[in-house]
Image 1 (cartoon, rainbow, N blue to C red):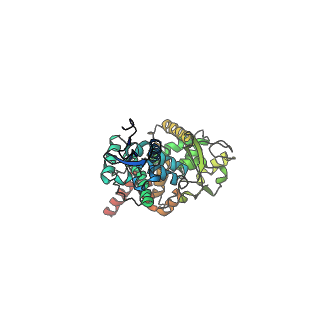
Image 2 (cartoon, rainbow, N blue to C red):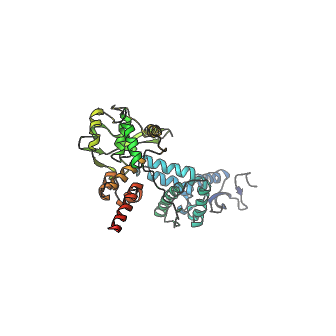
Image 3 (cartoon, rainbow, N blue to C red):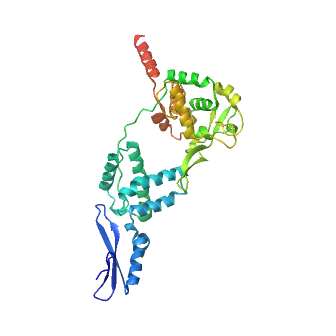
Length: 358
């Protein structure tokens, strides 16, 4: 008689047999394995070992997605920045494991990924978010290919319609600048600094007065809020987004009077050695400033897009602009940060008309 609910039987030959689920196929079917022993106690111990440590005692091609994710994340922990690792872990926990976790990796097919993609889209996630999830899945599957020699399917990403980034018009920029110069404080100065240098919000918040001279501004760190091991968020200051983000920007001469006015010690946005203004608070303050200017709500990054656009309109070559923004690839600057304003389009049309008349 089998032990109730344990999948353990005494065979006719006197041995004990215990069955366990060794893998689950993509369509949800369970495949069982068996272990044998001369006593109930011994076979139950073998069964539990197979359940708890399936990949250590059996062929690695039976590894499930959940097990693969755990091993891949462990391998990535010391290879990427803490904020990147946190994003990977969050994507895996909230999306990949919940939908694909029980499937054996070798059963992941192109159809499986297509079905997974459709489920994600049904959750009303943005195209970018879905593609970000697929990228993380692809990295984990590549790890499986390199580590276990498992053949992996091609991942087809969702076609993303490029969205025009928010750029302040020349008129909006004048309104914002005039507002910031009225009763200027350290946070208004910070917005001006971002508007006329194109630095990211994390780079601005991590900036210290030692980084600024009358000739140049050194960008070599960034500030971000990430989860710690206790799943609580905390502010961290580390190296910038990429190696090319370490850069030196010429100090805008128009800001020198304000730089000399506010110059102190410690962090620029607080004039304090220990205290700082974190990106989340700076975004809130920026939103309040934009609202007081009666300008449509947008995020802090619009200042960076605006800086890039104004540079192109002023005739700055793309290679120089790419270095000012801290990009390693000129294509990134062209595709993502350079936006043709209506004023520039209008000027181009006028030039065309003049050439036709003459």
